[in-house]
Length: 95
Image 1: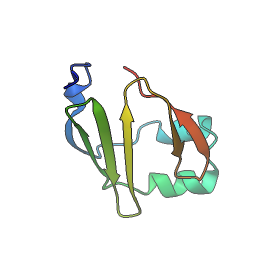
Image 2: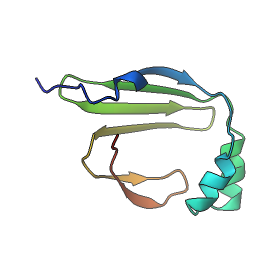
Image 3: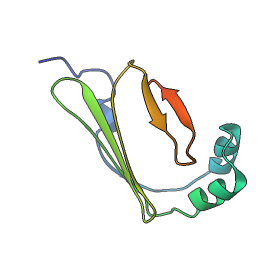
Image 4: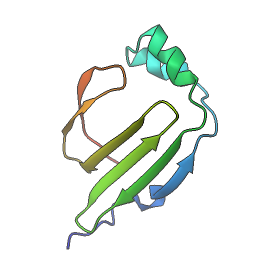
């Protein structure tokens, strides 16, 4: 059984939407189109659940009225992701 003591434990649990301060600017910097940014800003009842298994694999599940997205990853290991705007990117989660 691998250790999951990575410092990320404090993020485990269920999280609700609070605010979107600077969200549009962040999406713009990522190259997200105006129309997709407007749709993203309309999501205000998002719920995110973060969990891990005994082998250090993390799961982030984001649920909204528009879409449910699930990411599974191991910290520091690169994986392929398709963003909400359809762009394919390489991602590596690190603390």
